[in-house]
Length: 188
Image 1 (cartoon, helix red, strand yellow):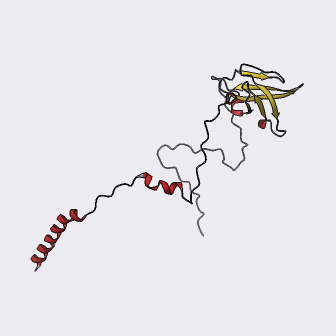
Image 2 (tube, helix red, strand yellow):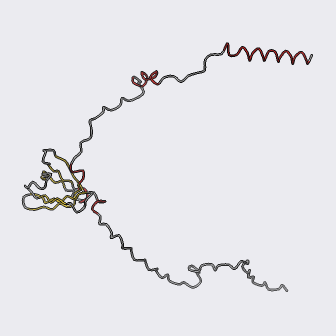
Image 3 (cartoon, helix red, strand yellow):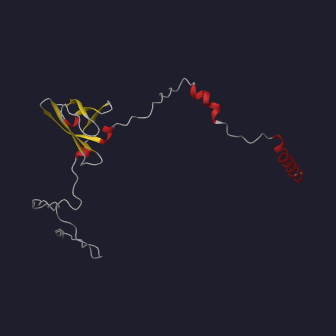
């Protein structure tokens, strides 16, 4: 009986293996991306993308930062510093068009609490108006390349008897430290 069952299961397995490709479906393929495009475009669960704006306008003032503003007779005196070349400075006086860019001061908005928030509205030669403000990282002085800060002197701590705050453990010589024991008095 055992030989018959083994032969029967072997025959059934062989027939099933040979017939499987005939009855099997094709290998699944990846569906095209455009298949779900309608769901993306008209889904009630998603927001519409914002409208695409044109190219960003490049201003001449993007290269400059505000270095200083001071009130003078007739308006404000404004100093601009080039961010890339710090030696390139433009000094604008009230009522005067200065430099090759044709900058003219339109208005100054000073913050009474912090001078860091001061902004100046400047009109350029082409008629566009833009704002410029202070940027502290460009106004900081650079240190000379060869200078170092002097080392700090250690502060002497007061010695308090009984407290071993400043003592450092001595380096070991390879053997275990000696254990000191206080002798106990004998009992009578």
